Structures are given as structure tokens and as C-alpha cells.
Length: 70
Image 1 (cartoon, helix red, strand yellow):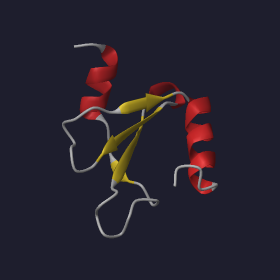
Image 2: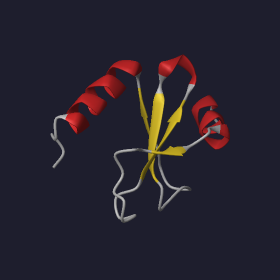
Image 3: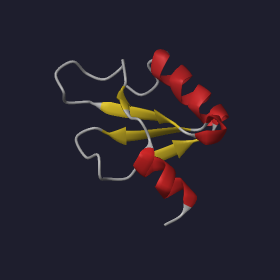
């Protein structure tokens, strides 16, 4: 098991405030070492997680706030 996988297994996940209130679009986020963030589908916690660098996270959050993802 690599370091990222171990860190994801121990991560404290929280539901995004941008997730849909009806439970259909639930995203969870975890803070990782080095300022990275992990994102996963809360309906599939054992599934894959997307790990973003601090710069990628900033770009992603800006896109969400600007409505760039529909």
C-alpha cells in the first residue's frame, strides 16, 4: 500500500457545503499532508478519490463558486 492510500484510509472526511441537500450530489473532502485535498463521492466511500495539489484545489473551488461545472 502506498503513502497516499494509507493517508486516504486514515483521513477525516467531511461533506462539502456545496453538496446537494437532497443527497443526490454528495461530495466529501479530506485535508491531506502538504496542503493537498482529496475529493470522493460520499455514496461510494470505498471508491476512488481524486487527490488535488493546493493549486489544483484553489482552481477547483474557484470553478465551483463561478458555476463552471453546471
